[in-house]
Image 1: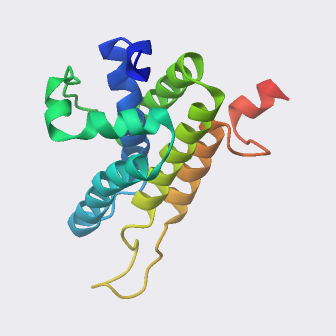
Image 2: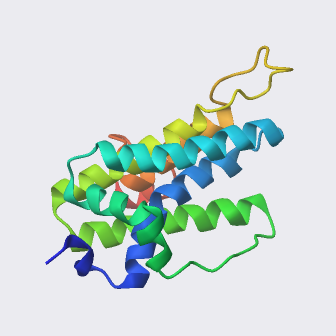
Length: 174
């Protein structure tokens, strides 16, 4: 039985979309003009493919196979959506990461779940580092903006990768 068979087609799309949602979460955390958005979008696509391909995790290998053009065409396509605000987009994208992680944790091995967390975080970090923020004509600015750093921390908390989580969920757990 293939690992992908543990999931319904709709669940598989959620798992497949989790890393892209994390990268998109970083992208909307600090929109950086057309050039920056294009660089970050390109980094997102590249990180999705390279991160999954480089792993020996059965889950990430299955994700990589599903990201190939022929296989991807066979999957149910997610609905196109519009957000009324950046805050709504951020909230929705972070929730999608949570849902994908829950599916992975309940339907795969602990090793695959850890590999998935690392993959999601790697995608987000590559998007955050893809374009300088706050410069002028390529000079100055920061590689990762304060808003992106905060978004990365929120993702780490969501994925359970922070040894000392912060935010509203941390109080409930403590």
